[in-house]
Image 1 (cartoon, rainbow, N blue to C red):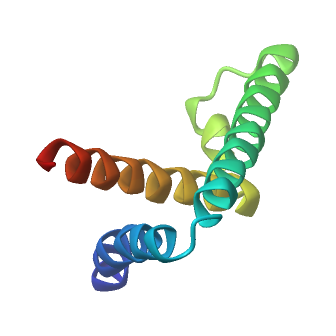
Image 2 (cartoon, helix red, strand yellow):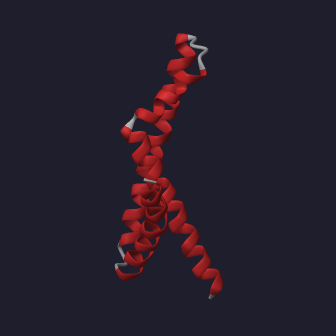
Length: 96
């Protein structure tokens, strides 16, 4: 499983970079997906924290239930890929 994670961290952002380079509209789609992912990620985080504060739960393990939410994991993964894509893009620009 670790190999799949490491390979996806390397391959997905590089693939996104070349897709963006090949198809000019791809950056608009990638940016929109990043905004949508951020909104989902932020909403789930805020909702989970507010639910814990409202119910006055003191167990630290309660907040870790957020990691069982598929939307949270998917949006967080996309944000990670998107950030790596932007870092690749910045590195290429800085090289000239």
